[in-house]
View 1 (cartoon, helix red, strand yellow):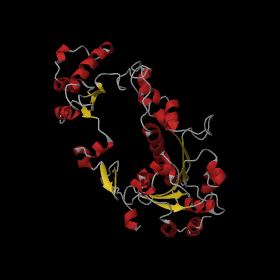
View 2 (cartoon, one colour):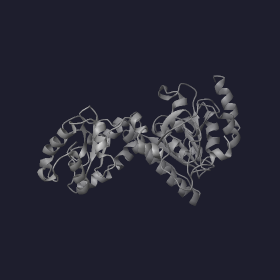
View 3 (cartoon, one colour):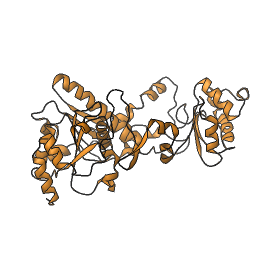
View 4 (cartoon, helix red, strand yellow):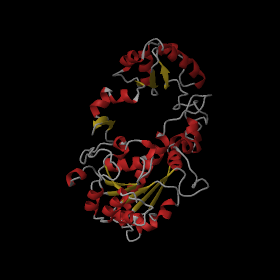
Length: 384
């Protein structure tokens, strides 16, 4: 990888060590890499996480990989040598594991106090549940987020692992390590960043907690303005089994929605009174059933009615607006999301395909001046 291919994006020149894991840690490191950071992923010998072929793991794009066996006698020292040349280190072990392996904050920051050490966990570094295993669904359940999602009277709806792992986890870790890096560059002192999914997921509910305190939100699923309880902020099945998403909150958008739906506004009950919501929902549902999704898409497209078809992942990639912006793209033979956000002066790029474990051993050893990597790679390949 040449210098020009590395120096692309606002984080060009920032060095990041990622201790391989699954879920939010790799995604956070991918985002830093997309922004131009030189991310070196420290992979362990063995089967790829979750059984996904590393060549298709998009969260490993724009990174380089080295193989280090942390249980080998010289493994921890090799990671510490990388950390000594890095600005940020990210790990996602249970509390205490990195310390036992010899790559905890004290080990890696000894002699390098400016290092930012980012820790990604579900429960956080302390508290009764800190040592326990968990997954996204349990974290957002505990944070009160899962209980908000779903139809009234029905079970909570599982939102894949986007709200916990990636919104409450990865994005908060990235904000944390970049804020700490800013402080470190001003003061020369780094710090440990404790990013817990339960904390981030709970933090995402700030607006809802404000509405709850003001009496504008009921602490019940599917009964509120923004949780599907409101008939003009909801989804409706179409006549062909598709779905349309309606978000006509403001008066003028609502008026346009009602008009295009083929209803007379003066014949509908007051939309601001929740007692009328069931009746409004029934009227809207009846209309949407009279045509298919594509037909309704054509009716609402190009208007301010705030109505959109509910698309699959494959369909989203082909949407004209997203195609225009290259929101999805094909790079290195893989269809994937493009870069976000966009920068006018320092644009990023999809510089590298997903890193295969150990593919950049000699390259990183040369660029980062870590001679121990060459020996570590040889020993790992020999099955040590």
